[in-house]
Amino acid sequence: MSSRAHSAEMDVPTAWDGLKSSLTYFYQGSYMQFSAKNNLYYAAAAAPSLWYSFKEDDRISRNARQKSIPKYMEISSDLAPVMSFPIIPIAFFNYGVKSDSSKATQFAKETFAATYLALLESAAMSAIHIHERPDNNKLSKWETNFRGSSSFPSGHVIPYAVMTLKAFQFYGPYYALVPAALLTATSIQRVRDGKHYLSDVVGGIFLSAFASEGVRKAANYHDNNIVYKAVFEHNLQIGYTSHNGAIGPKFSFDW
Image (cartoon, rainbow, N blue to C red; front, top):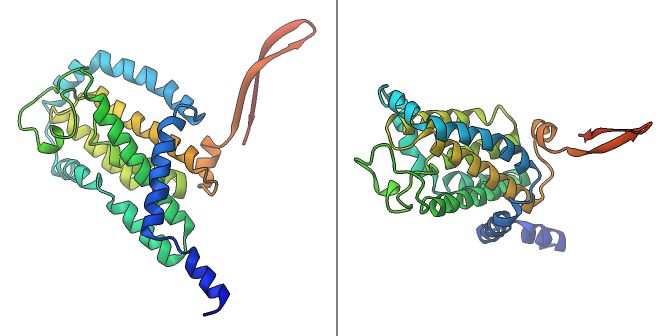
């Protein structure tokens, strides 16, 4: 075997390499999410969204629980716990290794790390008593054994939310449509079925967003989709300027 072939063989990432990288992103993302600039944008959107949701939870829940739940919503919601297992990340990692696609393997590692970071944070936050579920009847083991008594935030939406965000980051908005549709269907089902309030769903989505951006910062990956770059990868600075003794705000913005 030539030295070049041996070197190429040594460069092929193994499953253990992928897991180590994912766990590193998981750990670093847990604290880097608090310094990720993009999470300031998410926080600005999360604050009024959660305020409105908590304020209107009871009314929205009463109205939603009177509506029927289509079969496709039930299927989407039932699949959410299955998607909590690393099925998609493992598939993408193996595909990336076989096709020599660093983007696919990176997508797999970041999706794995962000999903489990958000799920762990969701389980921890549910131990803080915020509110009970609208309906505590017929809860599954997934809804009782892996979280506290509070229904905030929703863990069901996290796998779909992270998948949507990571698909957008790596492959663009069109590839994010399928997980976004599953996210929407599951969110509606959880509220109509009385398992969660609107605030729980909103909280789970933003929790996923914070984790996703924390992991992205930890990974420091640059070959993201052009649309994602146009929305998130820019430099926004706010300051002040003066002219002829007059002081005013200054905004600098570049792509």
